[in-house]
Image 1 (tube, rainbow, N blue to C red):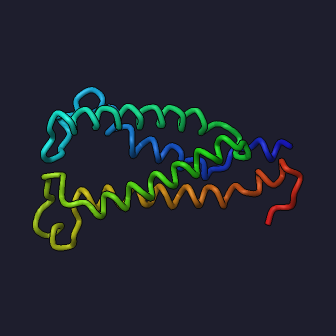
Image 2 (image 1 turned 90 degrees about the vertical axis):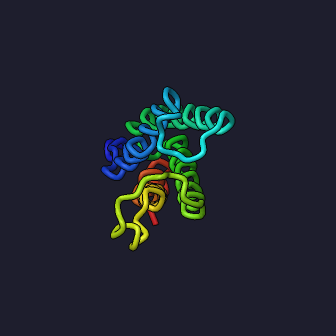
Length: 150
C-alpha cells in the first residue's frame, strides 16, 4: 500500500495550473483595470473580478489537492475538470479577436506569436498535461480498487 500512497512526479501539473492562473486571479481581484485588456467597461470589470475570484478559489483547491494521493476520486475529478477548463479556455482564446493590445514586434506578429496565442497555447499545454497525469496515474487507482492496471 505504500506504493499507492506515493505521489507521482506528474502531479506537478497541478502546480502548473496554479502558475498559469494565479497572476490573473490576483490582479483581476485587486486591480482589474491594470490588466492589459482592451475595451474594459464597468460590466466587464465586474465579470473579470467575479471570474478572478473563481479562478483564485480553484487555485486554492488545486493547491490542496496537489499533495493528496493520486487514487482519490476528488483529485481525479479535479484533474478532469481542469482538463475541460483549460481545453475550453484555449479554444476560446484562439478564436477570439485580439484583446490584448500588446505586440512583441513585427517579427513575432509575422509568425502569429501574440499574447493571445501564447496564452491559448499555455492553456492547451496544461489541459493536455492533465490528460497525461490522468493516464500516468491510472495504475494508482487500479491498485486501490484491487484491479490490475491496464
